Length: 223
Ligand SMILES: NC(=O)c1ccc[n+]([C@@H]2O[C@H](COP(=O)([O-])OP(=O)(O)OC[C@H]3O[C@@H](n4cnc5c(N)ncnc54)[C@H](OP(=O)(O)O)[C@@H]3O)[C@@H](O)[C@H]2O)c1
Image (cartoon, rainbow, N blue to C red; front, side, top):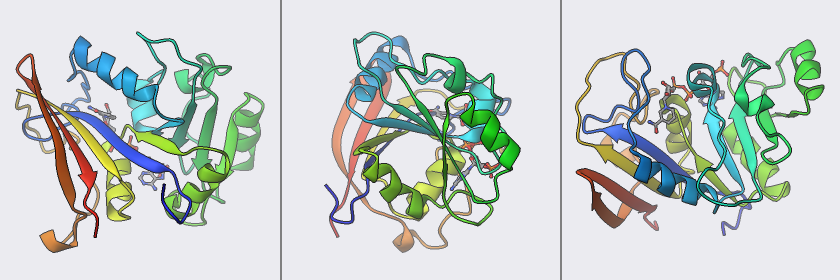
């Protein structure tokens, strides 16, 4: 466990050969049934699943567990302006098993905070900038007992975690397709690093080939 008391972060995603995690119109169907089972198994091993607001708005995921018995975990959504619909599955679907936290900023509208709180959503304010300050957020989550987070994207949220070098492990499912499209979301979006040397380094720990797909596991290289 990290000495500075922040949760261990595992980034998990399914992508095409060309690194897209959805098509240009937002079709996210990349994994096969067998891989969903593996991802749901991974979900049983964490205290929280985290996603960005656009993934909630576009895909309306339940972020639940099928295939296995489990006591549940937190769902965490990063939403600086509290703009996800209150009708979203992360709000409405089985909150007694998967309580939802929305991490936002100090600038979030008070009426939206009240609306979500009255729907049993916990709001955590982190930072005064235009986006949720994840460096401040992580120790707050740790204090709540969250030790392991499965980061399930999308590309913009992945970038913030990679930029701040707080991804400990990566699990990537690669489907043997190429979908292309400059507007199709990639595994990591955002500004990007100028030089290769600036990017965090990972060591390959496992390669699995299954049904013509590949699953790659990496761990952060010790500096
Ligand atoms: N294949 C896969 O494994 C997979 C997994 C997940 C998602 N997806 C796909 O990814 C797509 C969505 O990805 P996306 O990149 O557009 O959006 P995203 O990463 O899901 O959400 C990004 C949004 O989160 C909010 N946010 C708040 N604080 C943030 C922070 N510190 N850093 C980054 N974002 C922050 C921002 O909106 P505000 O500033 O308004 O708060 C930002 O625009 C969807 O098409 C979905 O299907 C695929």
